[in-house]
Picture: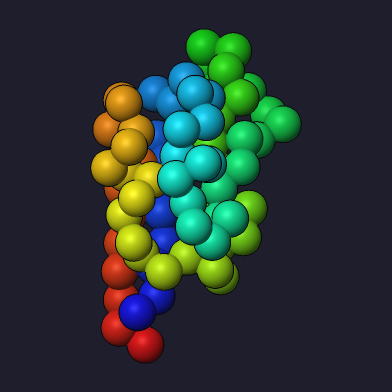
Length: 71
């Protein structure tokens, strides 16, 4: 199984809960900021994503969508 994430950059407030929940270290806070002035979550190691959905489950604002494909 291979996964990928899509973060709604404009809605992310950079709480970093998803970073701690990711078992493979896919997510980190971006050095760039969104329209609200927050550093947002971004996939820095997208090839490591397994599609586990931990990040989407713990996100308090539901700004992460996880996609899974069979390899």
